[in-house]
Length: 189
Image (tube, rainbow, N blue to C red; front, side, top):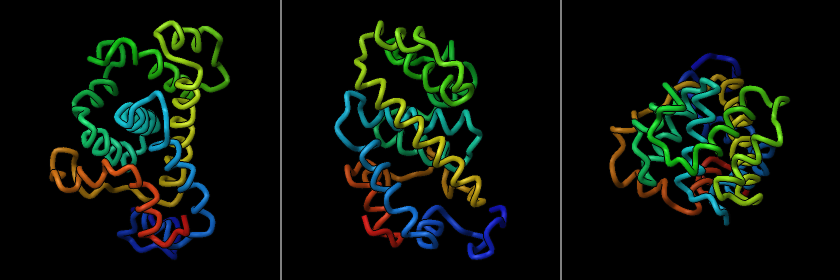
């Protein structure tokens, strides 16, 4: 950890940040839970894939690693996420999903340059406006979270995706994981 906040220990985690600033993070945690586990045309696995991908684009190793694990919990091979990071165009991603990933990539890396064509590519692949809005929300949440994590100095993920056991993966699949995590770390959500 980069020691950016004296109140956080050298081995601080995201849970430590929640515990230190519970009143400020409770509304955000509730929103993140809605975005990641609420009703959507996008599956939980697709939303976790977007979270891992956006975090990788932002070079946020903590969130990229954590959400690669979450994506693995929903059946996404971590190697697929790494292939996306290496070469988006040749990564073995469902062709129908690629326009959504292209959209969130551009929204992350050059937001003022979004065009009608970017959205139309998503619609042409068979996605609805609601699905695109949900992808935008996931992208927005993780651009925020990446800055929260980097801005507070949190930098380590305790395990690699391949080292996480099935019991932990099952916990990540909980529909209430995000609010449960917040409550376990002092948030009133």
